[in-house]
Image 1: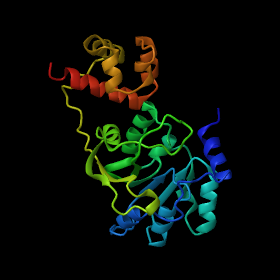
Image 2: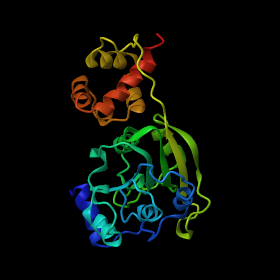
Image 3: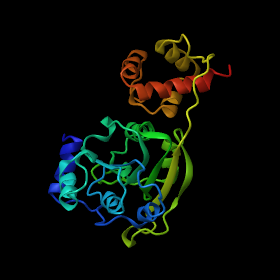
Image 4: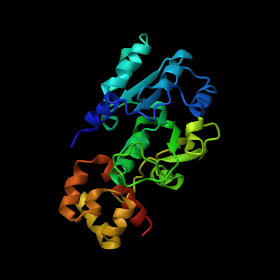
Length: 272
């Protein structure tokens, strides 16, 4: 099985880039045109040929970063925009990237990920972690049914599904059918602006104080059972032959998943 980097590099080599519009999409261009602060920190992950970044750069935005797992679209972008700062061209897996941004632009990136629960939960948590307080996730999500063909990328989805993954970390400013899509995508795109939620500091009487991860899991299992926990915290160790030991092993090395389990514990026991 090829890695994600190999997969996408091969797609570019074979010119199988049907999602490529050849220009910034109109809904995003319209959004960019109302931004007044040209020093705002913007990240475009899974950027591909990054026409949105090219447009922003030519409009004088000085702090735009583009990220892609394949070197080919980054090289093509650099050839078109030789004066674009090298340090803002990043070849890396999005989930390993670190930084802090005011705006992250979504342009078919979510829909490029294999539509497994784990991937989509990771997407939401990573987007939140990369955004500064009150930062915005802005972009376009495909609005058509998800197929079972895991090679048919980009994938679709529904407004309800997207909200289900994002609402834990973001509040919705707007999320509706795009009215100004290009003809090829008419009635197939949702335009959204999601604002990162404020994280309240932990209180001194936090129920987690003095609790080991093992104790937290044991109490959750006793109260809810594995099926409910899988529904609330979408990770494979809760869904596939779950055991206490396998869950502990995964959670101890996966901070974002452990945080979700702790949040479930707080919701379950803070009022009891």
